Length: 230
Image (tube, rainbow, N blue to C red; front, side, top):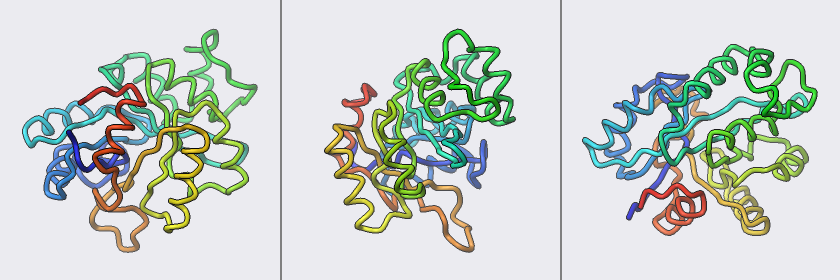
């Protein structure tokens, strides 16, 4: 069973400073035995991470961090995959359009299968959730502490499977609050360092393992999220 899990990590495939291989090696050094690579709007680094994870004994959950909007607020949505759906060609194409802000192209690809809620040039949070679930992902609200609290209360009513209750920027009272929200709403919760680099001058993100789920919490997340890697 896994004992220390960090489920929000970036690599050079988005805006991180470490390659997926280096990410896994650092995880091993930090005694983190299960991680998710969650690059912004791309799943292209996952295979490298998985191969390296097998070499070093670190389990990799395929993930992605999707950029969406709620009114004028940026909302990041984490998706975790239980199989190789992250390689789906349609998903990869959609993610490229998200990265390029070409929402009309996504609408063309998915129009009959997805509700875009009359948002013309932005990817609405609900649509982002639906896209990830369309490809079988377990969907988690990323770093809710960075959201306006009133916005958060509206957003968490959407069809999320859970939220990132433990996060690098949290104060103790923030973590307590978000854990209570998860319990009260019967939602999953995760932990994430949001690792980008070890070289940040003013640290706005954590180092792998700075915050983590313990053995019991990992089990609850994997089983509750149908991510059966036990």
